[in-house]
Length: 331
Length: 251
Ligand SMILES: Nc1ncnc2c1ncn2[C@@H]1O[C@H](COP(=O)(O)OP(=O)(O)O)[C@@H](O)[C@H]1O
Ligand SMILES: [Mg+2]
Image (cartoon, rainbow over all chains, first blue to last red; front, side, top):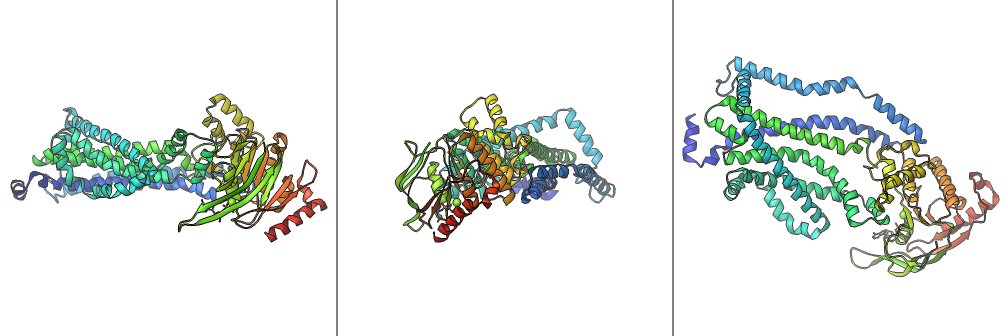
């Protein structure tokens, strides 16, 4: 561990903090891809129904509907049950392997602590309120940032979609801004917005804003001209066109993007917490790492992925409810 | 209400500069309460004409009139139906049908009643709560027709409304349209590429030339009403159909 100490003395503090950060990022990405995979499996199954029926041009209406009802009744309940249990099984297997590695003493326990000690630390940190305190800070940063980011991103997206010149003017700036790694300008933002949650919120806003804007533009562009014509010949006002056509149409694309944005928001908050160690789960992990409290690092990391996963699931449910018409295909 | 075009020409600006003449000049008057079909080769400007009468396109020269009003923008007195149903995918059948009333600010109870009243004769009562993705092509076009009829327009503009349907569905839904029209007697202009359909439904058939489309033939169909499907085998019917066929081939 001498190397670590050297590093801290010779290089700026922020740099040394990158290794847990990298681990975090890998972990979060794994979490996201896992969640994406499991959800997309569910969706792909549901998507099959409308596709099959939409392709068929049936002769009578009644037969068509009857066929669809049957199709839904056929849905394999057992398979669904297994799918629902699968994630739990995965976690169980990981814990078993983890315990195996610990028991076999492949790595010293300060690198990989036992599942039991992590659980113990978890219970302790819940009891003395530390975990929930840091969690609430990170959650605040994430949610506030997400809200502001989505608000700014979608409004700007709406404006850009309607004023094409703006897109040409702004796109180089936005793309350059977006392709710069967050960690690169995070220290600057901390300088400007301070050590507290404001700076982390700003980081989250920046991370969330771009995909939201792009999705809004894509959503608005995807509104078929034919539907616009329908609204026009019915003498819809500009406001009605917006609330009853553009907004719902963009919402479909926006919600799909929001799932990834929600997890990106957690990453943003944690990046901020690593760069300026203060409060929040990211800071908790950074501090625990400095004290070689590896079980607490584990608790922090696991809590973070659970947080990201919960947000993802929440948005998925929102999407499932708001876009229920999608499960029946498109016109 | 009367529909009229007076020396109307529509040109589109082309990408390389210059203009593409899509329609005209056309001049015609369609009398109040008549059912008129429009036949013509594809790309001759039929859709352009319908869109212009609906207030979606502006004439480069000349004018379009609905009664005394020069058409410059859409009107709720004019109901328009396009070749594709264009249903809103996130709205159920009844929510789609209610859309015009909703946009006009009608109260919910009134919208619900109107939707029930419209869906019944179209045979859609059972399917109120389905989403467009669950409908067959024929059902979707019925819903689109219901959505136009609910605003009780005096003028109906139909652009190949049943073009995407198979023959069976097509005949059924066009007879439904004929029944509804004979009760309400809107002024109706329908684009079709089916000569038999045009003759069977219409009082009068207009034939357009190649692009830029002009009216090259104007045929009255003097078959008695009510019309029924078997009429297509009668000599009077075949005579009109043959005449139109020749006109189209010359177009
Ligand atoms: N928005 C447009 N811009 C440029 N050209 C158009 C546009 N809409 C139609 N056209 C052209 O005008 C002509 C007539 O089109 P259209 O009215 O759709 O024909 P039809 O409905 O009779 O098949 C076509 O040559 C078509 O390419
Ligand atoms: Mg056309």
